[in-house]
Amino acid sequence: MDERPLTKTRKGPGREWIRQAVALVLVVIITVTVVYLADEIQRFRAYGYPGVFAISLLGNATVILPAPSLAVVFAMGSVLHPLGVGLCAGPGEALGELTGYMAGYGGRAIIENQEMYQRLERWMRRHGGWTVFVLSVIPNPVFDLAGIAAGVLRYPLWRFLLFCWLGKTIKTTIFAYAGAYSISFVERFL
Image (cartoon, rainbow, N blue to C red; front, top):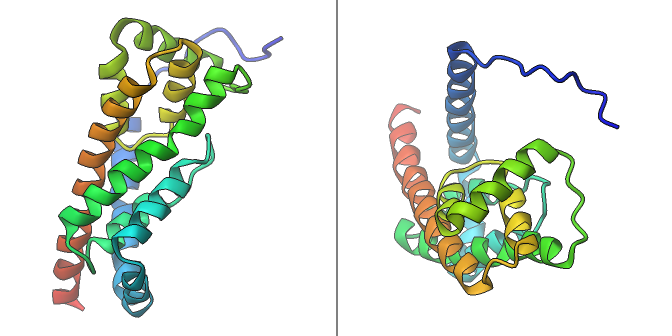
């Protein structure tokens, strides 16, 4: 039995400001770290686009646990052509998300946040493709739950992969370009 109180906590505008500030600080930290580790990142260049694909695939194959594949995409955007990085990372991330889909399809998924899962399952029932697309284009920790819900609902695999691929490719391309431009921006000041 769930021991949590039944009342919902209010989320005021202050929390949103805090989340945005934390996100900005993380981007600055990643950017400065990438600049200082430029020599190490150049070694990744040897793996090229197949390396970007593999890291994205493996980074997204973890269900629920965070993996830093977007940080690698961000960094690789500064050493390889950002469009190529995005076009390789997007399919890798989409294929990596099959683990969540298969966990749901097999019925063996353990869901800790039942409320969020129930909400995502309703969204998947009503707007399957759009739910997958929107959640895959925005960096967020709940996409795995959407993949699990898609599997449980037997959402067509080809549609799941198509919408996931589109969203993930847009997201990774944006991150790769952000990495390319932020690195050159920070290097001007250091």
